[in-house]
Length: 117
Image (cartoon, rainbow, N blue to C red):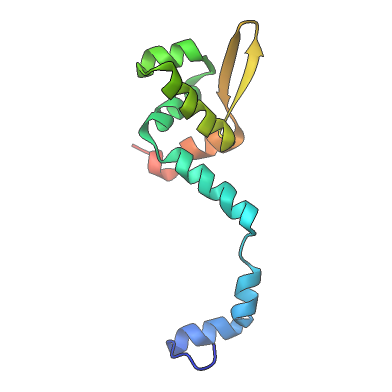
């Protein structure tokens, strides 16, 4: 960071860890950043959080989720797709129904400290 005026303690710490290049080398790649971003976007919507909380109690079919949320089929489908694409829920076909449950990442989202209380 030649030519830049940065605080001495930041410069020393940066030098100790190998410099800017080493710092850049520690960053996740674009795919990982996109995945983390999708995870946080999916967890940021109140309707999707309600779905995650419901599924933390037990696996559910769409008809139960829809009854509790009282939203249109198209909106529910949208929210379920966001959660699936983010890897937070999965759906398994059982006859005429799809039963949704949390994935490991979905359990992490519900288990984070922000959900306490």
